[in-house]
Length: 623
Image (cartoon, rainbow, N blue to C red; front, side, top):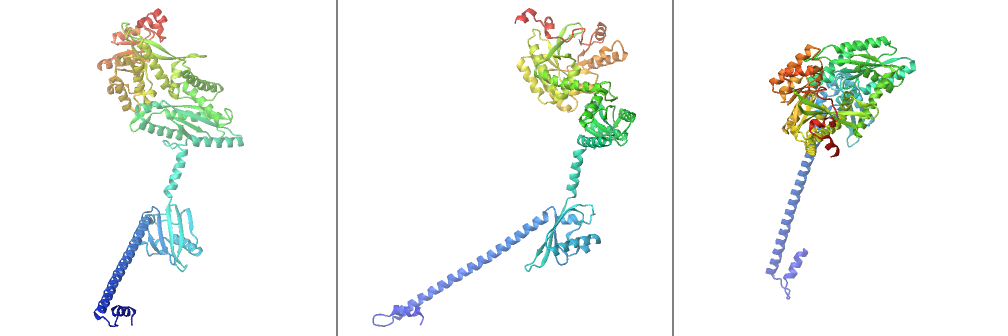
């Protein structure tokens, strides 16, 4: 008897030993109901477990599918070729998109095929040989920078490839997996970078670095063989004017054309562009001095011919300095310095010349460098002076002064401005000098009893500095000078280059009330065109035309033409460099409005002109 039934019978038996059948039926029924409930709970639990297992399995399948898709996406989109082969017969079973591009054929034409069915015989043999080596050795193979695994597009691709063996669960070879990276472009780029590091980007000539290397090698060879050679330092004359007039794009084309002419005349000599409009040339060993001179003169002649690029015509020149090893130096620095000294002499003697190095040239170049050093000290130690030259109407009435910088050197005395101003523009000191002159001129003019104008020259370098407007405005505020009393004089060099920016800056200065004058009018290429672009307040005729008024009819005609043009545009004209009554009379007859020059007064300290500006000398002395 089941223990549950025995227990139920005992629970249904009374004290007399009689079984209460009704009670027994209730207990048995309750037991069946409990059993049914347990069975149902079990069924539900089993069902839930099965559903959860199914969901888990489904999620695992989905995760596996996503992982597979993720891996496939990576393999498909990785930028290097990926492939897999059957290790038994080298048949391709996987190829990604980069692999299609590398091999030059769709994967459908490669999958399931062996190398013999895809590649030319020689390439197929090499591929199979690689595969066998990997299968036999069981170790990965890495080949760098080789042409073995190439595409059907041709054997001009350089690749890095890596292959490895994948075994099955029993350790038998199953798959060959590999990657192929096409490094042709990278290698070409590295070659281009290496080339650019040693060549000028504009002309593709060797650059300074390449020249220095070649010179060092030539020196070593010459010292061992006791031979001689020449170093030429070249500079294009007036090339800055080409950039100024035509702009840098045309200037670049002209530079390339000039470089081609130099190479054509060099007879195989080593030609390098070391920067700007400067070139250097290494001549062959033991070349005769007269042959060096002949070659240099041919180069001067070739460059001197008219340059034409895209319908633009220009004339430039060439100056050449020559130093010879070992007479003019036994090391690179000395040879280059002496060639530069000879070049400096060639340019100073009128350009378009060829000069061999001579001992005194070194002194000249050292003197120039010393002058540069002294100029920097002059700025730092306030050695510069501001002189003032009067400007007058034709009847002699003084209307203002031009502020001019002067340098009284402690040992050299007064250094001519045409010597130190170009130096200041070369090394950037002109920015500090120009600002100082402007401040001193405005400060002085603000103290004059008479409201005379003061004119200050602005260098193109100051315009390029970027904060000229702020500097001028700040100086006017500091000194209290009315903007209407300030006149800035510019040459066309200010407008050349970034014409729009310079024009906008001039317009902003004019809006402040500052007057703008075109200085040295007639000496440049584009003065007339600039008059159409900006309403100048004044034109200054260059002194070179005035000084030749009485000597050459051409100068008189040029002055008449400038005056006629200015009158048509309602622009007053100042004639510079007026030194004689005859010049003044001519200008007055031609209706020139103003003049400046020694006839009116030389540049002097302002104290020299106290009577003209209304200052009592005694009062100023004790003020």
